[in-house]
Image (cartoon, rainbow, N blue to C red; front, side, top):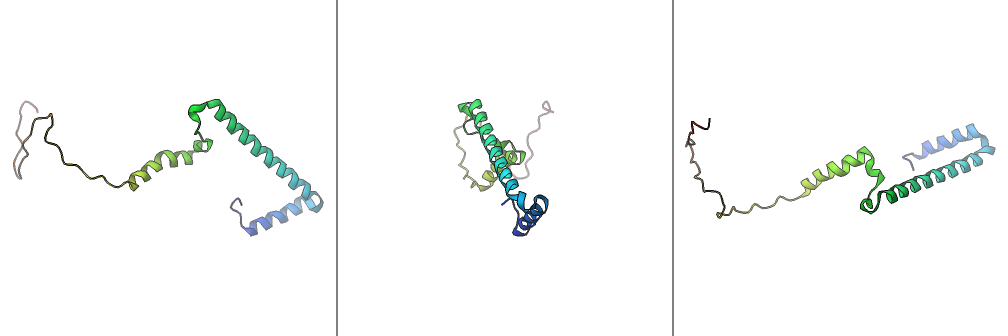
Length: 119
């Protein structure tokens, strides 16, 4: 729950008892619960209104993707991980029926032809 351990939760309860007192603590907890429900409802309504306003072409839009950390993870790092996970494809032999003229390969130690007009 919120990344808190039992010791932290117990410390928060003790602090709440000291701040609000035992008679006002149930009222404060009820008010905090109502506030959290209202905030959650407002956030869900805003997300639904945004999706309705964007139209059907953005039906898979998730506002959490606008968070920079999620954006980088989704658009940059996922592509890198996909590339790492892909197996290298076997190279196919080149076909000899190409539209380019055939070129002779140089042997070991041979110099390429020199074109004085090209340099």
